Length: 167
Image (tube, helix red, strand yellow):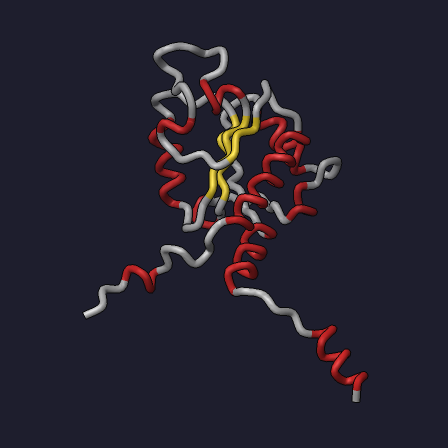
């Protein structure tokens, strides 16, 4: 009889729904495939066989409606910022943003009226990946930081049930 109790104890896993949801969200990140400047070349390299972001659950998607991560990889001009914001608004919730490169983080060497001095002025940025351009390893580290942030987040906070008006 003792063997049955040990078998049951070894095969049962106790956890919360929130930790399962966070694990699944962090294990399947789908970034959009669009690049703005030279950082996009490094982003493309990170998706190739040598660095293989697929092993971390990162699969590039062609549409903002199919993705949950936006990588702003390069210089954003004032004329292009509303387009990036529109793409961000088309992404389903929950969604996250990675600012890749010095130009996306702070405008970089382009301190002019035509360049947005930081992506945080028009979208909320979750992870900054510094460099000019950052290496693919740095982008991989940024994804690992984002996965840790997602695992620590409250998955069930702000659900549609919270917004239902009770009589």
